[in-house]
Image (cartoon, rainbow, N blue to C red; front, side, top):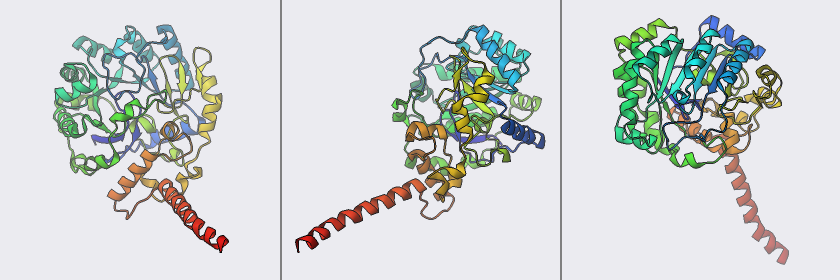
Length: 419
C-alpha cells in the first residue's frame, strides 16, 4: 500500500510513474469520473506552482528561483475561479517553496471556498504548529515533503541549507497531529543513491507513505545542468532489485492512522497518483486530457514536464486556453499505437515513456529517447525477458550494420573497377 517508486523529481512535481507496488485502481464511481473527464476534456486535476522562489538551493532543481513577476493574490484567486468553473476537482499547490508566499493562507481560503480537494508540496522548513493547524483549517488534505536522506550531512549537502533535515523532520509530527496526510518524497541522484534505505526506514517508523524518484530532468528552459546529478541506469539496478521495496509494510503511528482514516484514499491525475483506468488506454499520459500545469506567471502547460506554453492567464481565460489552444489540441491527438518508433517496440509494456522528456531530451514529442529505452530494457530484463532491446536501439543497431556492410563493399567495388 505505502511504497512507490517513480521516475523524476518528486518534491514539487515532475514525475513519470514507475512503481514496484500495485497502482491505485479507482472505485467504479471514480473510474466513471475519469472516463467522463477524459472524454469531455474536463481539467480534473491541476498542478499550480505559486512561486519558483525557494529557501533551499537543491543541486538537482530545474527551476529558476528568481521572481519574474508572480501572479498577485487577486490573479491567483481569479485563476482558481476559472478552474472551478471548468470543473477542476483536485488542486495541488507547489513551488519553489509555497510558504514563501505571504498570501498563502488567503489563497488556501479561496481554494476551500471553491471546494477543491487540496494538496501541497513543500520542504516544510517553515511549518510551525500554528501553521499546521491553519492548513487543516483551510481544508488541505495532503502534504508531500521532500527528504533526500535520513543522514543530515547528505540531505543538507543537497539542499545547501545547514540544519534543513532537522527542521523538515520536526514538521512532520506537527502535520500528522492535526490530521493531515503526509508523504515523503525522495529523488535519487548521485549524491544520495545509497541513502534511500534510510528514508524508507524513516517513513516506516512514522507510518507514512514514501516515493523514490529515479530520474533527474533538465531545467525547464532546456539546459542540462541538473543531469550531472543523474544516476546511470546501470547503477540503478541494485535499487530496482531491492526486495525491501516490495516487502515494505509500514506500521502506522496513531497520528498517521487517524489522518488516513479521516479521508478517502488519495486520488488525482494518472501522472500524479498512478491511477490506472481504461480511459487512458492508448494515451501517453493524462496531460492535456484531464490534467495540466500552471506556472507562477500564469502560463498554462500540459504538464510541468512538458514546457510548451499553451497560453497565459494574464491575457486569456483558462477555458479559452484549455479548449482551444493548438498545443493542447495537438497533444490530445497523440496515440501511443501511432508513435513512429515506440509503437513497434517489443518491450513497450515495460516502458514509462514521457512525451515531455521525449521532447526535452530527444527533441521529438513523438519520438523515443535514450533514458526511457535504457530503463525499459532494465525493467524487461528484471522481468525475465531474454536479451531485451528497445525499438530505438534495434533501429540503431540495424543502421550500424547497414553502414558497416556498405563500407566493406566499397573496397571490393574499387578492386572490381580497376580489374
